[in-house]
Length: 193
Image (cartoon, rainbow, N blue to C red):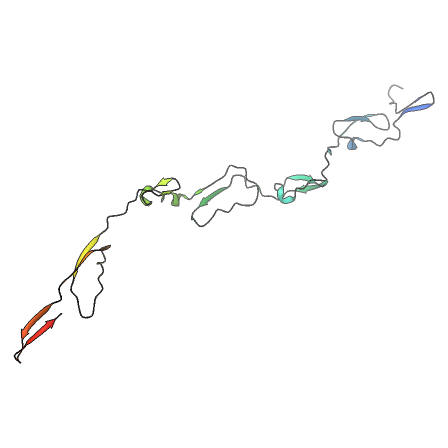
C-alpha cells in the first residue's frame, strides 16, 4: 500500500477528501505551483498563462518587428521597424530631416553636412551676426569707387561707373562747349556742343 497514492479519504461514513473527479493537470496549473491530480499524484504546474490581456491596446505597428506579444488573448507579431541609432545630415536650410517611422534607440544623431559646416566660418558671416554659434567677422571688402567727368550732349546721357568699379564717388559735368567763328556773310557762327 505504500506505493499507491491516496486520492479519497472517508471518515465515519463522511467523505473528507475526494480527488477522483478533479480535472487539474500540469498544463492547467500555473508554472511552479504544486497540486495533486485525480490519482493523488503530486503535479507541478507548467502553464505560463498568468495574465489577462483582454484590455490590452497594442497593435502590430507598435510592437517591434518580429517580436511577439499577447493582445486581447491573441499572440501578435510586431511590424514596427527597429531603426536603432539613426544618422542624418542637413544639407539645406529649407529641407528638413524626416524622422523614419519606427523605434529609435536614442543613440543616433542628425547634424549639418560637413560641406555646409565648412562654410560656417566667421569670415563668411557679416560682422556681429551669429549663425549656429558662429559670430561673423566679415566687414565687407573695400569698395572701388570712381570719380568721373562728363560733357553734356544734345541727346542726353547716362552716367555709370566703369565695370571694374562699384559706384561713382563724384560726377563732374564740364561746361557745354561753346565757340564762335566769323562766317563769310560778315557775321559770326556760334557752335554749341
